[in-house]
Length: 191
Image (cartoon, rainbow, N blue to C red; front, top):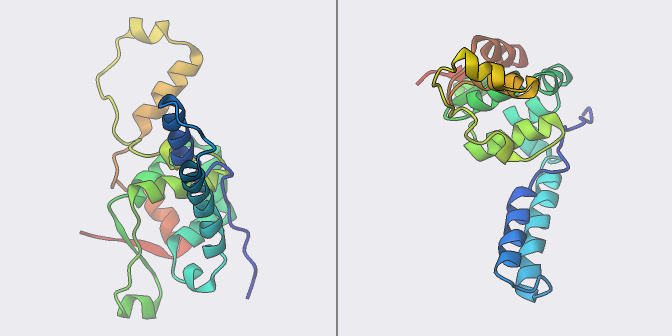
């Protein structure tokens, strides 16, 4: 069996750990406390367990996450465009997917994930960040901006605003994402 390189983010599984440490510090708790150290170790173990799990051939079989994280051309698209990355995240939310394989279809086997997992998959594909960088990114402000307001934005803020306007709601599957998933051998199961 061919060995696959699985795209991964070094920051994955750090958001909750960092927020836990921050809360403990805000409460004036000693980080050397064995209970706190146990929780920190639990967070660290989560990343190690996920990395180990990703090497399991049983987990890899008929798994859209594995296919996404090991396919160079789609990883490149996620890394080249934040809009594409957000659109992929949104598509993974609230949808079921099926591998276009006779046995998988006959068994009515589907794949799905949580919004948090979807954000983590995209972070892993980008090779940076954690789930929180994408979580709820489809919920956006749709109030139109006046030209005078636009003119006061920096070029970076204008770019960010344009990207935000191109984001789609969780559960939305754009034509480009649908086509790319089909190219991977997966289809979105209609409701």
